[in-house]
Image (tube, rainbow, N blue to C red; front, side):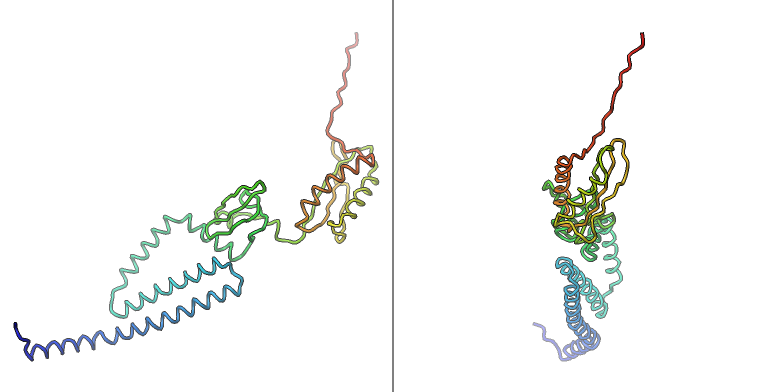
Length: 278
């Protein structure tokens, strides 16, 4: 077995010392930056999560954004550390950029839905349990997900609407306000007493505890139709009582009008036959 000479040992030691002096400080500095950077990132992520919790951000969105911040900052830290130890990062960044562009083009629909979901969860145009009309779909919001919103219709169908279309469209939220105005139109015959009909309507609406007295119900003649005098009633009630007031008062007005001898006309046509003079 060949023995290593003292001269070779000295050469190896000199080479090792030279390499240590050349690469040691950058490696040590990179290690320190890595450790400190991870600590700072954890603090930033924790502060981000705490801030979103104080802002009452949806837990799902808060967790997702916190993870997104963590991944992004850690990727930047690793690239910086790699650059400090002499690793060429330009090509690596270019590859990541090209891959990100390709993925973005392939998933542009999903990314639009994701962005829409973030906007919905941040600005909260509606929440779970609200009754809304969006993208031609009317129903109660069952779930708000990152990519889709699940709406349950009145006949118990589940409809999944992409968040991208919801965030870019018109949203009617029927549950956003505590009160709503209930509009009615009742037709009476031209031979009926208008003052009597308005008096009956005023009595019915003011006696219903669900109907607000302030503002008081508005009862006016709104139009003269082909076969009826149309009386419009605008009454205010709690949003939760809307349909109860609408259906209940419609039925009660019909029953009371019949009892008071007030007609509710329907379209009809009189046909007159004229015989030919002989």
